[in-house]
Image (cartoon, rainbow over all chains, first blue to last red; front, side, top):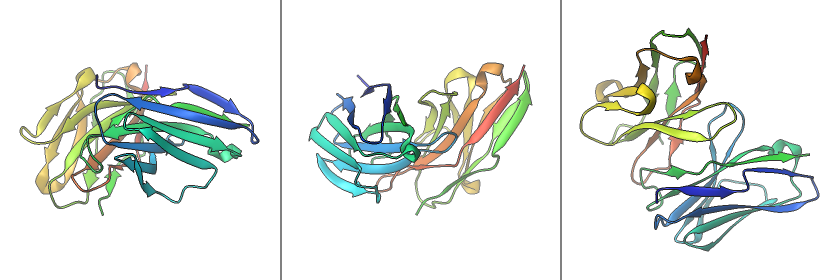
Length: 113
Length: 112
C-alpha cells in the first residue's frame, strides 16, 4: 500500500467554526508533513512530524493546530480561520524526516467563508 | 539551502507540438529529482523521478526527463502534447538531510 489518504476531500467552513483534516498512511513511514497550496503555486511546508513529535513549525498561525495521534495518522485542527486560509491542504509522508522521497495525498480543498 | 527554478511561467502550445520545460537547481551535492503534474482542480501526481543510474528517465503519460549534472538541470520533455496535458508542472529536488524543495511551477496550456 503506497497510498496517503486524506479526508474530507472538500470542506467549507465559516470563520467561527472548528473543523479537522485527517491524513492516514500505512507504509510504516515515520515522518509526516502538512503543506498548504494556493492556486497555481507550489506547495508550502507547514509542519513536519518525525516519530510522532513535531519537528518543524514553519511559523504557522496558531489557528492551525497539528496533531499526530500515532505513526499512521496526522490531523490538522482548524479554528477561527480567515478567508485567505482557503487553499488545498496536502499531507505527505516519507520513510524518515528529510528522506528524499515523499508520497503525497490527494489533498483537502478548504474554503473559508 | 537548495533552490529550484523553472524557466517558464506559462507555456502555450498547439496539440502535437513538442514540449520541453526547464528546471534548474542550485545544490551541488547528490540530488534526487522529481516532476509532478497538477491538472486543474486536482491533486499532485508524480510524473517521474530520478535517484541514480540512467540520466534519461521515462515517466507516465509519455513524459521523459534528462538529468544533466554539469548543467544542474532536469528538463521535462514530451514529443507530442495533447489538450489533456494542460496543467501546472512542478519540478522538485530533495536529498537526505534536506527538505523537499519545489520549483515555482510552469503552467502549460495546450490549444486544441
